[in-house]
Image 1 (cartoon, rainbow, N blue to C red):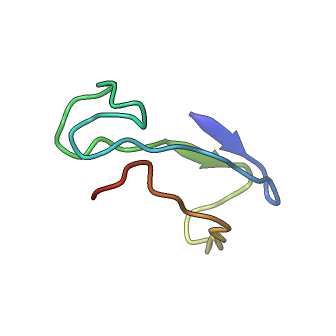
Image 2: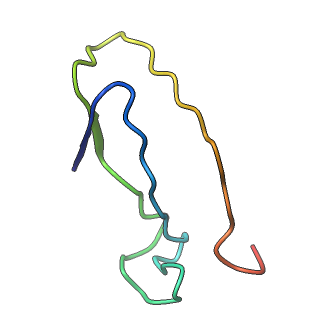
Length: 63
């Protein structure tokens, strides 16, 4: 679990729905493994989180 404080910047990579990473190495089981969890320091139930995606890059030539 990654603990994030307000204002932190996070750089992460994901895996595909079959569990393969950007190097085509199987790192999780299917279907649709998730990236995370992330814990936001100080967030309370009912709070609204604002997330800005600065850059998204596919890790393969096909999708």
